[in-house]
Length: 82
Image (cartoon, rainbow, N blue to C red; front, side, top):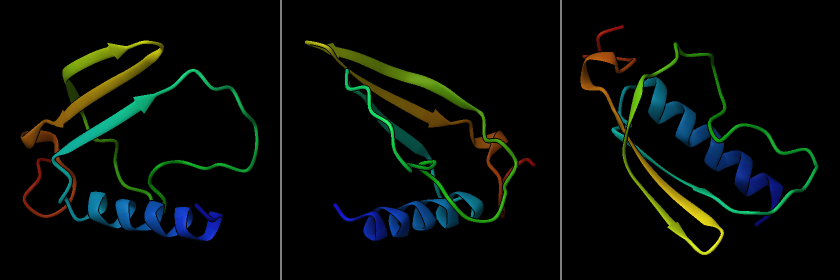
């Protein structure tokens, strides 16, 4: 994936988060240590932190699959509690 495409996805995810449209986050943690210009998974204007709760965690070999749910009363953006 090109860095431009990744940056575009990070901005889209940031915009969806700011609008209060994200209700879950699925995060994969893999055992690969690297360095470079990588940024956050969400980019854009600052938004208040969003509280998440762990819904599930699965370990497969050395990879960890995490599923977090946004607490509905703590969602930023329209209709949220912040």
